[in-house]
Amino acid sequence: MDTPKRIALVTGSHKGLGYAIARKLGQQDGIQVIVTSRKEQDGLSAQQRLATEGIEVDYHPLDVTNDFSVQQLTEWVQQTYSKVDVLVNNAGVNPTMQPEEASLLTVQLETMLETLTTNVLAVARITQALLPFMQAQNYGRIVNVSTEMASLTTIDSDYYPLAPSYRLSKVGLNGFTVLLAKELQGTNILVNSYSPGWMQTDMGGSEAPFTADEGAETAVYLATLPEHGAQGKFFAEMRKFGGPIALAW
Ligand SMILES: NC(=O)c1ccc[n+]([C@@H]2O[C@H](COP(=O)([O-])OP(=O)(O)OC[C@H]3O[C@@H](n4cnc5c(N)ncnc54)[C@H](OP(=O)(O)O)[C@@H]3O)[C@@H](O)[C@H]2O)c1
Image 1 (cartoon, rainbow, N blue to C red):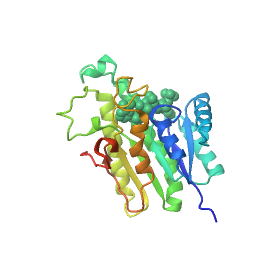
Image 2: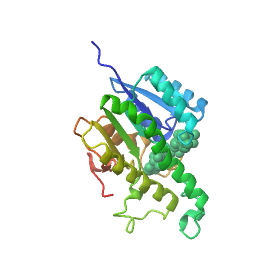
Image 3: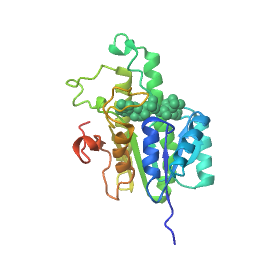
Image 4: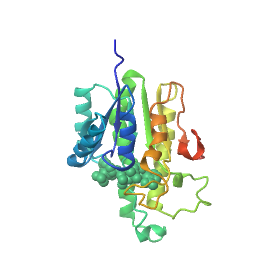
């Protein structure tokens, strides 16, 4: 009898890092990927591009900041697969290039709120919706895409811009990872954060040293962890160190 495929959902996966993660997971035997995007045309186009490479993914619209959209996705997952095995929380926004983000004295609180809404609250929303599928089968892998800019241990010595909205949102995401890991102790549902490094995407810009494909490597590693694998950790991009390395929070 065939082993049922793992169902892997990647948020914001029509382009950039999310697309690269969906593509790499979709290349693995035994994984059925669900590509999601807030604009349907974007997602359908990504699905077609992957199909030209022989990677057959499913697609469903998803705006992670919208309760109704998450509810519709959850109902569709229930009807179509009755489970989710892997959730990659990739969708994110980054207003760091706005001049106001150079100082806490000028940062626009509205921008900070919007950033927290997408990068933290939306992760809580989609996790609340999909975790019950994982709990029902005592299997799950949750990958939260963070950044080393959110490491509180190195924040006073790193060379990145101040970027308060973005950093605080990813600090919040990392905190979410730790708290969820505590709640999931003793289960086979593993949740981790990771930093993909500075990549050539719309967010990272063309000057970035690494490709989205390179940034996707650690996501695939964390999405396919074995039982008793890492729980509640913060990983660096694997390519930088030649293997999985945990960062200081
Ligand atoms: N690029 C880097 O150097 C870098 C470094 C460290 C961490 N990261 C993280 O990597 C992740 C992916 O970033 P990227 O570089 O691939 O950036 P990107 O090309 O700008 O992609 C961001 C993705 O998030 C989606 N998104 C934003 N808001 C959404 C919402 N409300 N609902 C659903 N999807 C939403 C975008 O969809 P739309 O096209 O509809 O906006 C897009 O698919 C982010 O979490 C980012 O913080 C990136």
